[in-house]
Image (cartoon, rainbow over all chains, first blue to last red; front, side, top):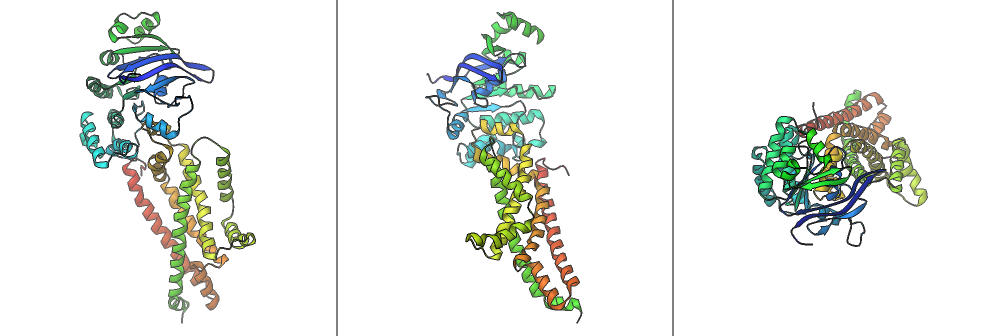
Amino acid sequence: MPETTAVSIRQLSKSFADVEVLRDVNLEVAAGDVVTILGASGSGKSTLLRCINWLEQPDRGSIHIAGERIGLDDSGKRMGAKALARVRAKTGMVFQSFNLWPHLNVLHNITEAPIHVMGKPRDEAETHARELLAKVGLSDKAEAYPGTLSGGQKQRVAIARALAMQPEVMLFDEPTSALDPELVGEVLAVIKDLSAEGYTMVIVTHEMSFARAVSNQVVFLDKGLIVERADPESFFDRPSTTRVQRFLENHG
Amino acid sequence: MSNWEILWQARDEFWAGFLSTMQIFGLSITGAFLIGCFMLYLLEGRPSGGKLSLRVFIDGMRMLPFLMLAYLLYYGLPTFGIRLDAWWSGVGALAVYHGCYFAEIFRGSRLVFPQGQIEAAEAHGFTRGKMFLRLILPQIVMQTRPLIGNQLIYALKDTAFLVIITVRELTAAANSLSGTYFIPTEAFLVVIGFYWAVSIAMEIIIKQCGRFGAKRGFDHA
């Protein structure tokens, strides 16, 4: 597998009880790509994203992060906890509900994994964390605790926290869905900056104009199947399936 | 000489008893806290036979009068060839007994711990042990602070039972003075004063610790 493939998903299938949420999904994300995953609620898009770092275990198929298989070893056996954690650390994940660790201040939320997972020296981790805080526009909040931040600020800290792992790919799971409308913009602006800097990202979102502006590949999921994949212009201006046409009409 | 004067003359005995009680309490409650944390860790993850047995053990301890456990360790174990002295039997019994209470307190808090934080930790490459020590346990301890304070007082009071298995502690000192001079009321009042003073001091300290959590949004008071 070439080095330039950040994420490679092959023949991925996943069911919850009787419901098949992903069906033979194939997706290649090249380094530097920004892929947005669109689809109605329940289409399987969050499940797909959560399979990438093995928060959900697929039933069949394979996922490689920068050439390394996640979850199962090459002979198909479950990875040990340490090996899984190591591959997971190659991805950075941003959740809909932020999931910051409330007992740690902003700076320590960001340095926690670099120090205690990656084994970075504290001063190096803190210097990097402060750079990332500057990048997300929160330099003045390093000592604040998550409980005192607004939703938009929390999500920007969560983005900095994920970036601190220096991941091969950033995964965004509806990063603005839990935000007040007036706070959505500040988070999207940060993600746009990251795409301009060449970060590889996979983004599940309901923000259509954002998806159009930020991505170079749009994937549309319906009932666990990828029904359309295209560059944003083709996707939004000339959708080839009626399913996507209907979806876009409903999302203005 | 008034009864109070007699007690004043015997102040060294009270003081020795008090120090002994504080030693037993300090050691056993530290042990209990660590046992509680360790049991909570053992209960992490998917249900298993081992975890079920641990739950049964914890519940069995919680439903046992403390004195029975102290008796069992001190008078019962020798029949199996294990002979602990009274002091260590007492400390061991207190540590295990209150360790189970701590485990149950922590378990209640763990049940409502936000799953999202666990996922965030997993996504950032944390393995179970580190996640538990650095992210789960500190929050659970902050969350359960008032219950921990309550348990400390229970454990302090339970040290008084050890007089029955011949440990020389505070209650034993009062017992012996009241027997020697027949002044039970005054002797026991003094001892009550000691227990109250220590309990109040602990309550104040535990309350102050709340500031640490309040800064982080764990307390609203």
